[in-house]
Amino acid sequence: GDSVIQMQGQVTLSENDFLFINCTYSTTGYPTLFWYVQYSGEGPQLLLQVTTANNKGSSRGFEATYDKGTTSFHLQKTSVQEIDSAVYYCAMSLTGNTRKLIFGLGTTLQVQP
Amino acid sequence: EAAVTQSPRNKVAVTGGKVTLSCNQTNNHNNMYWYRQDTGHGLRLIHYSYGAGSTEKGDIPDGYKASRPSQENFSLILELATPSQTSVYFCASGEGNYAEQFFGPGTRLTVL
Figure (spheres, helix red, strand yellow):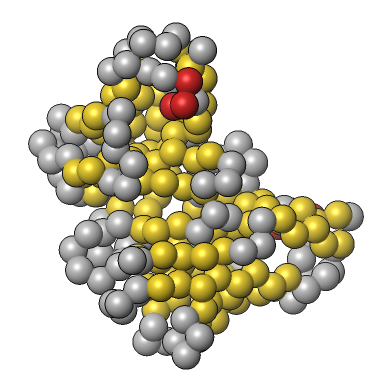
């Protein structure tokens, strides 16, 4: 069935460190892939959208790349700051008319000053 | 100014009681969603709607009902609340396929 796997549950970094979070997906269709960010006490919000047509997306210093060969997509940032501390979710939207998102389990990023 | 609002923000209920969680959106989106968020499970879809009068079952609908009386409002109803339904619930709205979903601030529900 359709699924999204996000293995890293918790990541702790220091300011200016490099961030890399990976997700893999499984579907028979042509997905659109997303990264959502959730700050403490708030609902998730869209960070990046990556389509299988353009392979990449970027926003707020974050970059997302999609690899069809390995059915994976990852989020990276060259130099994280303390304000980036949040939960990051990868998500997949399926083709067809379901208009649903399938979320990964989330990665809690803690950036120490 | 917030486009998706939820009420109440916090709720304590007793086992067997009825709980209604409300969501209002000013985005004029056709699609609305209810998720629950639990440690170790991420965000899971309970019910969703394509427009006023429609409700669809999501991935974990058991024990929940939904109601979409208007474009703006989408409610989640727990007829007989159980402690396993203690969670944080998020409402979201969106438009079209592959489109961004806009989330509310969440409702923390505790069932004793």
